[in-house]
Length: 253
Length: 253
DNA sequence: CCGGGAATGTTCGATTTTGCGCGAAATTGT
DNA sequence: ACAATTTCGCGCAAAATCGAACATTCCCGG
Image (cartoon, rainbow over all chains, first blue to last red; front, side):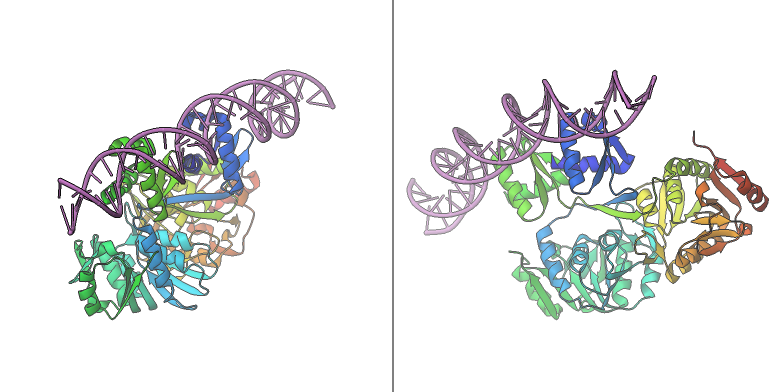
């Protein structure tokens, strides 16, 4: 039933409006069920009901959607994000890398006053869009297919034009030799981010460790701080604490 | 058992949602076991339970919304967009300005093969995201508050780095003296777009004419072609046809 | 081979969701 | 303005689902 709510909204996102009858046959339920769905969604402010159907809410607001990849270890990532947010003070400038973990960081810092955020992720841009307390700068570049983010030479060059207090970067893998990602273009963007930041913090959940991933874009000497989950193995902690000065193990009870 | 948790998430990553029954038969366990799995995974924030099954929690719908008169003259704007799409051939490069009319143009050209689109609008980027036939480049810059688009010096400089076949620009107003918009930053971006395009086409519905709007960002000599609605007054047509070579009046029955 | 604990299966009452009938309300056509 | 048509929503009953308590099976070290 909850899933049908989402589907109704998706249907409306495409056609802008739909009749009760259409939706009922589309989902194979009775009209009364659709009516109840629409009533709830209207109560949530998601749409506006009309006679015989519904249209997208708030007369004249258009909604668009990017698809974000399925997220794993959500609770751990949120705990990591909360720790990362503690590094951020009012008035700071920071860059946020692409990734689901950094997206959680974006959500965690959304309430801090007077921030300037530079990012290459459209997902993060969406999450912070409309916040009056955050000046949001999107690096230009080619939109990657399949992932809502930017990469390419333009993205890199744009990154080099800025200097920020803190770079918050993610990763697809990490081992003794350094930090990895799966996409070469994203790797170059991440390097540019680190180069123009006063401090670099790596946010990565425990599953990323001991798992290399195609492109090594940073060595541990480039990383000033690591925030990860409490579930990292003791074996990993051994060499990690040797390679990086500041390490935080975020705990999600 | 831990492996089943992962496999449940994998199954959901594929189908985005599943019923308890499906999962139970799929893994050869009882429904109660699946329920317990789902309860744990929900506690970890990995998914959202529904009645009868579960769906991905952060199955991320990323939303940009902007408040403008969108439904106003929607049919006319779509007719204009269809005409504009006829100018676009496979293999072309083009820039799309911010605005609801240009957004309709983006939707109209979404099916044309092998296009390269450069835009400053997050709404357009959203509409064209995921299309394999369109190489999408987003100009960098500051995200405007209240409107899902980019402006500022970075946006302008990025625009200057490209040369495209066609620039499709919108407007908030137009009169004998030229073309207007309400935001000075957007005006500068539009100017940069026109400067780097081989041809410029203005798309604007009939309500925009005889209505200046703060910043004049183009004179009629900069505009190669105008596409508007059939409802423009004869008085306006008189001077417009004198100022611009190619004019198309799109008709929406 | 045995015992303890965790995972799984089963039963059954409570909760939620769904569909239908009918009168009220709204929209449309004349 | 009036009437015909469509749509809406409330109450109630049927169906499905959920969750707690208890029984059973599996795993693993001693």
